Image (cartoon, rainbow, N blue to C red; front, top):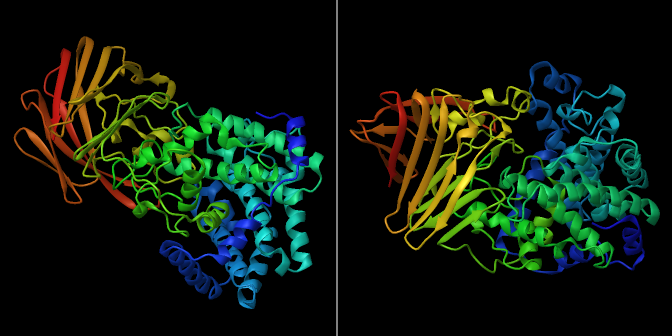
Length: 592
């Protein structure tokens, strides 16, 4: 971490241009088919925007969060405005003679600058997580207030020479009043400054990135950047040396994507004196993205992850160019530039500016123990197994210690449902009343009808991980994840037999007095039962779960839930209920 004197000295060196070189190069070179498709998509979206008025952020929509817990109604309008900002900023830069694009850009800049607040209703909280007084709303710095400042600063970088002087002054005035000046008040602390997750990165990177464009006074810039870099240290400390983001790959993209955008600008501005990309942990984080894509067709969806996560192609090309051993997932996983409905300006812009060609592809066979995240990955033949230990106090936590995901030819068949609908309840003490966050929706047992409990004290103890020529093994003790006084021990052993495409689940329970357990397995598609097995099918792939029908009664239940995108979904759970209470129970379940 650099101190203020080092930052100041680095800023006084003759730095490189921030984005201008890349902007000029983009206009001169021929582009990939992927990039041409993205440019076409931006133009099509512009036609839609031009046919509709700028959405109004009304009081009634704002109030919904407090009145009903609904975040989406207000956010959808808010983010549409950010989508317009990116689309018309990009098209005005690419088509400087087009008056229609330029006028649309001017109007959306003015609309965004005229919003009463840039922060979201759910985020009007202080460092104690208590509600802020109303008078602090205009200068509250959350993810989206900071992103807005960065987006407007980069809009000026692209188009300042085309904009009216009053509009330029309005942008700078609003960023100064809403973001820079409040952040320079060192006696006022913000929640994100101590949040060991994507928040500390996104907020600090966006503030710092905007400042590198707009703050001319070197002493002031150094003061602000020093505070930003302290936040970046908090963010980097949320990772272990394995570089895994336990929140999910989408949060890796979000937090680390903004970090990379800022780190790139900082490196250029200081002519390499402040270069994060030499840091070993930063390099490990850069290489971790590819691990989420080991299955080939769907991603690892632990915690608030998704099985259909797409990567930002510009960010990924940049990392491959600057950091050794970064591997790009297959291009079918690349995100269309407008897929992100939060319209994160800096990442979308760099999908254009940082285009390239993939140099390497993922390995067909892979195994790893990621000791900090406590993830076990084993891929061979048609089977990919991902399991986790960890604890139940992680950022964006689900109660899922000891759970696993099983992929057949890249398809997630034994599933982790990933994130649910983000509303007020989702981030409240009632979080674990929600199906997707409960342990009951994961591939882990109920013990005497009890589920795992939240909190870092409810943690797994890793006993052994082993990688051999014929099998890979993951072995952990999970007693502490349950609050059950009758339970002495619950050990789970997962074995991936590499030459037979089989996974063995060996669960061993010990009770003070005879107890009962129910093994749970989760599918996104209906499950069928036969005499001593259950059959799960999905997207043309099939697995068979073999169990001892003398030990278990099997039944299937269907569970409805609301997904992250407000859509009604169903999950099917296979419940293997032990027939008789026993003091010692050994479950041997074979999956092929």
